[in-house]
Image (cartoon, rainbow, N blue to C red; front, side, top):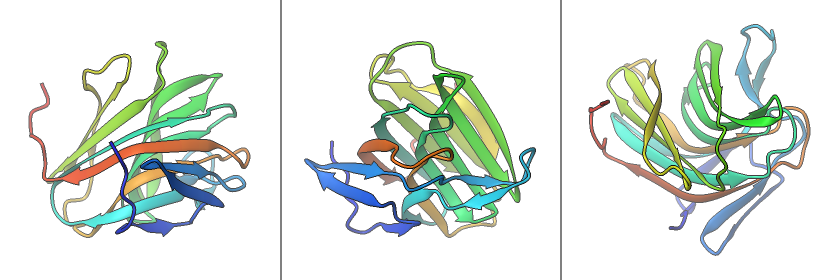
Length: 193
């Protein structure tokens, strides 16, 4: 598997991003994040996001790994219409452990997360957009079956969508992640079960 970034663009480029052996190696800047308002009161839109453009329905899949060490270190996939309408999902480090995390933002952000208790090296995230919904799934190299994490609303009138790997480190700089593969295709299925 390889990641091809030749036709992709950065929102908030990181201080370091390099493709080596087909893998994208990245390092975060100082205190970067994506969040809008809820509970914490702050509005942040300075996380790192490498994206391709897509219209209509699709399935996006990304495989990645990271050196999660500090609170809120995170890497995964983002689906974004604009600064007030987006979804990010993947691994977020909180309470001393890796959690599968999903943030859905419709002007204000919400956050759901659950702890992953099994060991793994690589995480894969798959998001399928069908009409007004994002179907969010995950698997790991140690548990390779796709599992449902969330079914979330996403405004169907928003058709020009940015899709791709995202990562940030709200408490520090220097979080390292590696993106192994990224694909963006027609929807794989509407099946949930």
